[in-house]
Image (cartoon, rainbow, N blue to C red; front, side, top):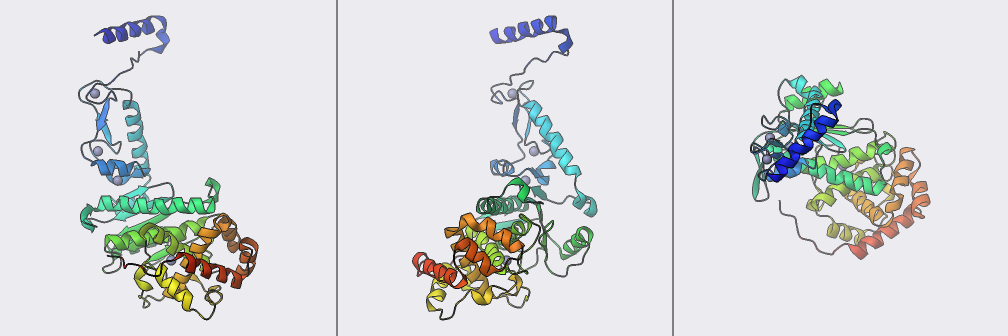
Amino acid sequence: MARLLLTLVSGFILVSFAPTLAPTVIPQEGCRRCDKRGVVPCSKHSEEIIAAEGRVHFCSVVAGCKECGGALVVDCKRCDGGPENAAMEARRTEVAEWMKRNEIEAHFGRPVSRCETDHCELVVDLSGSFKVGRSRVNAHELMHLVADDTSHVSQRVVEHFGVEEDDIFAKMRMWIWTSAEDHKSAVETFMHTSARGDFKMLGKDPVFSVWQEPGLFSSPGAIRTVFTHNVGHMLISNLFRERDVGPIGGGWFDAGAGHWYEYDRFDSSVQYCIEEATALSSFADGVWRAAMRKLVSRADEPLLPPLLDVPTTAMNVQQQAICWSFYDWVVANHQGKMRAVLRDLKQKKPTRDVMKEHFGMGVLQSEEAWKQWVLDTYPTREKKKRR
Ligand SMILES: [Zn+2]
Ligand SMILES: [Zn+2]
Ligand SMILES: [Zn+2]
Ligand SMILES: [Zn+2]
C-alpha cells in the first residue's frame, strides 16, 4: 500500500510540474505472478522451442501464433503490465514486418515454414514427425535442429577465416520442400532456371534446394547432414569474393571444407557432391580417421598431386575423403593462414604457389607433413557409427 501511495504521489508531482509530459506515464511494475515483468511466456510453445527461438532471428512458425504473434510472451492477466510490455509490442511489430517480406509464401499462396539466422535463410517446408535418436520431433523442431547445425558451421567458418561483416555478401538461402513439384516451382520462380535434381548455386547469392526425396533426403539424419555439408560450401564460396573455387583449381580445398564442417558437427561425413549420381558409394561408411590412417600408411604414390586440378564434383569418394583429411591438417596446423589461402585460390593462384607461400612447403613436402600428422594423431581403430 505504501508503495502504491508513493507511485500516486510521484505521478501527481509529475503531472503538476511537467504538464508538457502528458499523458502521464506511470511506470508499471508487474506483479508476483509475472515476476514483475508484465508479461508471461506464451503457453503455446515448449521450453525447448522458446530456447531454440532465441538462437534464430525470426521463425515463421511462431510468427503465426495467434496468441503471441511470435513475441513468445503475452500480457500478464494478473496485472496492468510491467517493464517488458513495450519490448513485447516492439517485437510483435518487428516479426510482423519480417513476415511481410515473404516472396516464397506469396508465390505458393500458403504458409511455408522458414527461419532466419545470422548467415542463413532456411525453408524447411515439411510436415509430420521424425525420429531423432530415441525421441520424435515435429517438422518445426526439425527446422530448428537444421538451423542450429548451420549456425554451428557458420561459427566455425567465422573462426577459421577470421570473417568480418564485410567479408560475406549474402545470406545463404537453403530450402527443402515436401514435393519435387514445389522444389521445381521454387527454382523456376526464384532462380529462373529448371532443376531436374537437387539445385545448388555457389559464389554470388548462394542457393541450395532439395525436396524430401525418398531414400535421399527423407530421414532427419539425411536432411541435417545435407544442410550442414552444403552450408560450408556455400559460405566459403561467398567469402571475400563471390566465387566458387571448386571448379577453378581449389577443388582440394573446397571438397575438404564441405566434408570437414559436416564431420565437425556429426563425427562422420556421409554427403558427397559428386556429379555422377551413379557413384552412390561411400568411403569407410562415413567414419574416416582410422580408414584414412590406413590409406596413408599404405600409399606408395603421393596422394595429393593427382587431386590438385580436379574439380570438387569430379572427385570420387576416396579423393573427397583425402581432401577432408588434408583440410583437417590445415585447420590443425595452419589455421591462421586459411584466410589467405582461400583469397589466393579465388584469384586462381596455382596451388603449389599457395602452399609454398602459406605453409612454407611445396606440394610434396606438404603431403609428407600431412601424412606424418595423420600417422601421429589418427587412431588405428574406430567404432562404426550407429545410424
Ligand atoms: Zn503480472
Ligand atoms: Zn521456430
Ligand atoms: Zn505464441
Ligand atoms: Zn561437398
